[in-house]
Image (cartoon, rainbow, N blue to C red; front, side):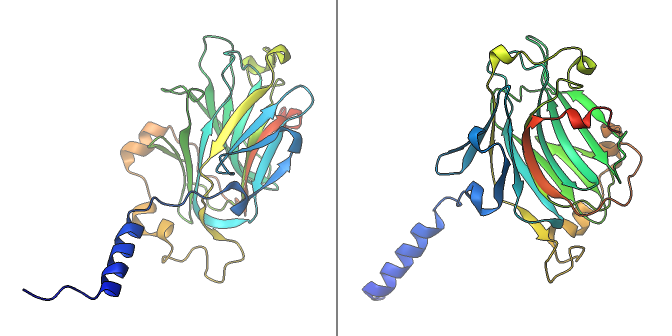
Length: 272
């Protein structure tokens, strides 16, 4: 029988084995993001691994990525407002943006008993008209759900809970998210307004890791060495494209930041 390993070596082996079983670290909000506005309605939870954005009649809140990006995977877990049932006029958004371009997920609130609508859109040089809207097959207000955007030199793909739709965009840049007043347009074309007696409306966000190429990176953001630029991420199947009801391929979208927001949105009325 061979002799047992020296105690020091055995200790190292045990430590490595225990370390390998440790759960992946959950990034805190302030590692990649900063508040954009609405500090009074911005609440960190669980040591900053979750945040809540609240909106009342006086204000909303939003946050943005610290950096701008040239390509990558952008992901956020979101729980939209809905505890009161009535959320007409309330818009929760997760989007990539730079002036004058934007790529967004927008959740449009509704009256009691009617589903929340998810609207996606791409603005290129300030022009939209690429909206796609659908009633979700799950309740986005009941729990946190995963929403992702893949953006590389070949395509722009929205991914919600594993279902994908491709817009074919060529170039976004930074992340944002938040909750805002969309009374002017969000529900029934603006006919149904926010009921402020049910405020505050609160949205939750978590999952603050970013896997993307910073626009100041020394390695080109279109490099095939980057995971999201590899062959498997260069196109969707014909079946997925057909299921997505895809819009015309937008061109000339430039660097974007990620923003999450909850607040006034009247400036978007009539945009497109």
